[in-house]
Each structure stands twice: as structure tokens, then as C-alpha cells.
Amino acid sequence: MEKPKLKQKNELVNEELEKWKQTCVNLNNVVEKLYHEMEIAMKEKDLKMKNVCSLWFSKSFGLELESIVVKENKTGVVPHLDTDTTDPTLGSNGFNALSEDDKEKMEKVLFLLDKFCVGDVFCHEMTMIADDLPRSYSVKQKRDQLSEICRISSMSGDAEGAQVSLKELLKEGITEGTNT
Picture 1: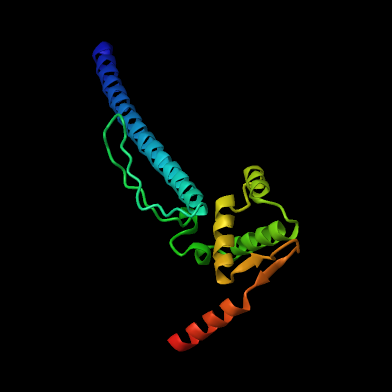
Picture 2: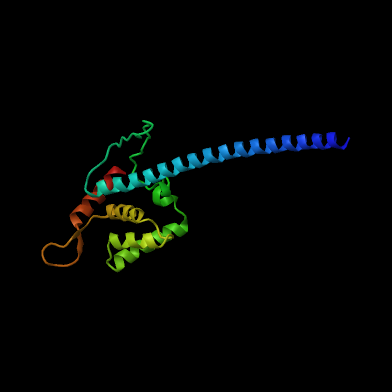
């Protein structure tokens, strides 16, 4: 009488163990699927970040990129790549979408770059060392935005310094005044 009860308990334990094995296999499949999806998302994000850098690079040479078309070799999938030059980490509103702390950091970095006359290479090297600094291409984009506000050119001849064209400022002021 003891043996049938033990056999029955053993069968129940075996059934329970099989259920747990199946659950583990299912969970393992889900984890593998999520890992694969996460890997793809990280690759797409990395590709988009590289796209932003390459667009900025071409823009720095006066080239305006209209589109990028790529195709995955293995699957033949053609992912959509934006040709928007705004930093995806800044959002669609760019600098205005940053928190006040991030805006302040960006402005401080721009001030220090200008104050100590260090170039973009130094800024890039610093962002590689310190993770809490804004990315160098974001700083370059913000500097370009600020530079578009007022056209400053180098002094002609051997004189050091910069100058603002009074003629251009007057033209802009008159144009803006007549448009409003």
C-alpha cells in the first residue's frame, strides 16, 4: 500500500518538474527574443547617432545631404534613416528640449572653448573621458546655431581680431523692420 502512494507522489512530482522545465524553456525563449530585439534597437540607435555625425561632417564642408539609402546584407531589409541633423538625444526641439542643467553645461562648455581658445579636438577628447559632458557634435551644432545669429568675420590683413559688418547689420535690421 505504501508503494502505490509513493509511485503516485513520484508521478505528481515528475509532472510538476516537467511543467517547470517547460516554463523555463518558454522563459528562455522569451529572454532570447527580447535580447535579440534589444540588440537590434541598440544597433539602430548607434547607426542613427553615426548618421547624425556624418550629416554634421558633410554640412561642415558646405554639403547638404538629401538622403541616405542602406540595405542589410543578410536580410535585405532597408531601414529608414532620417536626414535630420538635429541630435536625437536633444529631441525634436534641439537645445530648447534640454533640461536647465544640460543647457547650462552646454553653455559653460561653449564659454570655456571660446575663453581658452581650444578647438573641437580638445572638446571631443574631453567628452570621451567625462560622460556627463555634452557630446562634442552637440556642442558644435549649438555653436553653429549661435554663429548664425550674427555674422562675425576675421579682420582683414595682418590685424588680429574679429569684425561685424555694419552694412549687413543695417540691411538685416531694415529687412526685418519692413517685414513686420
